[in-house]
Length: 221
Image 1: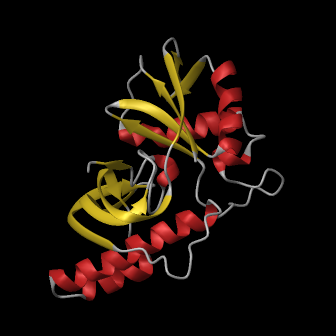
Image 2 (image 1 turned 60 degrees about the vertical axis):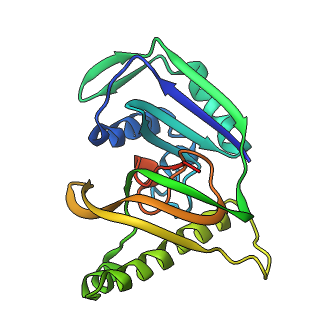
């Protein structure tokens, strides 16, 4: 799979400002629904795995693009984006660093270890109730493993990766609960490590709100 990352090396944004960066660029390039994931004519949300994701990596604001289709949109952005406006403040972009590479993605016969470097928002309203009702940590972990597997299956589906009948994703995890602010609401997220036999591109997101910088994954082993 093709992957591209655009770093804004000379500016500083907090994690809570990433959605504002996404909103500004989404409005600036509103003709590209891959950026804002809304139908251009109706304004209705397009439910899919985001191919363009906004995040902070090593304290640097960044935008990730997955697949050749998204990278083509990326090129347009890189060439024409000279400043951003956050909270009414004009911020010139003097040091943009763009990289493009081919990365491995999909089922593997080997097991890899990953770390969530930003909170994984794995719970929705329905499975939060199930999570809260489980009295033991073992049962909670089993639920989170199923949710994480579902995230990987959903990601592969929207990226047009078909798994074979005998290709079953396995996961194991070690997480701790953290507080996360999502769209102005305090919610439970998770930080920690997990193992799986599925290859994930570094800095891609899993779970809810990955286009806003949540659930960022980094391979550590």
